[in-house]
Amino acid sequence: MRDSFDREIDYMRISVTDRCNLRCRYCMPEGGIRTIPMPELLTYEEIARVCQIGVGLGIRKIRLTGGEPLVRTDLPKLIAMISRIPGIERVSMTTNGILLPKYLPELTAAGLHGVNISLDTLNPDMFCRITRVDALQKVLDSIRAALDAGLKVKVNTVLLPRDFFDDAVVDWREMLALAKELPVDLRFIELMPIGEGKQYYHVTGEEVLSSLREMYPALQDDHTVHGSGPAVYYRIPGFAGSVGLILAMHGKFCHECNRIRLSATGKIKPCLCYAETFNLQPVIRGGGSDAQIREIMKKAIYAKPAAHCFETLQDVSEEHRMVSIGG
Image (tube, rainbow, N blue to C red; front, top):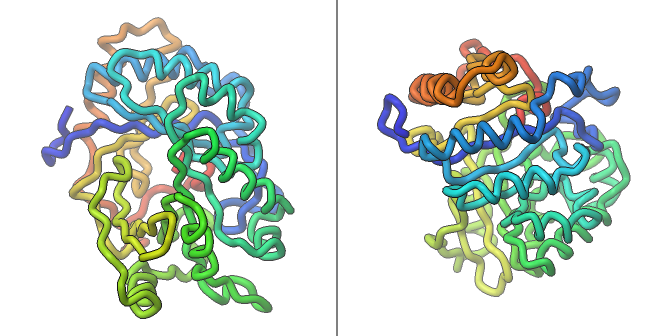
């Protein structure tokens, strides 16, 4: 399936819940959010059906997100259901890692190929202040456990301004120690102005790359394939892992966009920036046919805009928090 701008759409990100066991300051308020009642969430069988239909439209790669996907009961069951669908080439998951070691044997047995683990600092106090939970060691243990299990591991680090806190400095450079020691893809991500993220100054990927070139003059472009996402990768001599940049704000990669999103309630979202969605749930629960669901998905794909408009906030129509969208 190609959209109206001739981009091939082969990747679907699926939010399975809006619940999370962290309270990251740039993502949600300290008291959390009003969560969606469970009966309104798509069942695993309904999600698998959408994936099956998606394969007929060219979807080949699935990523499960949240909130935190592992807070939803029996997630390995869903992964097994999706990975068994003929035509699905890869099933991966984005997680904060806290619950990952507990479920790793079931997840790998179900067919999980890789994990993106969110981690913004290696400082225990800073981690606690950012996430409002004291759990850094659990996340670090989960990274090692995932590597030991043979999974492809990417670490997602949101670029926060140095003065994110009045009395302490947030420094992305500290995260480089992780890529030096472990064979992970460390990706620095520009913070998008969605939800709580609107109130913070955004560190640019260009600033990071410029600093990397100064720190490591032998920095090399890495053209090997790391996945199906928009990250640009670099190799630092002597590092076990790679360093990537996702320039969501200052390096528009919309011309290469290959994805759609399915919300936990069954809405297809063509672009993070805009509020427009295409609701599958009434058709799914109203006895609609696969052909009817397929037509809605086709319309959603064809409705993908040429590009986001995060650089002009007055044009951004999405008002939900990222935790509710499934970034």
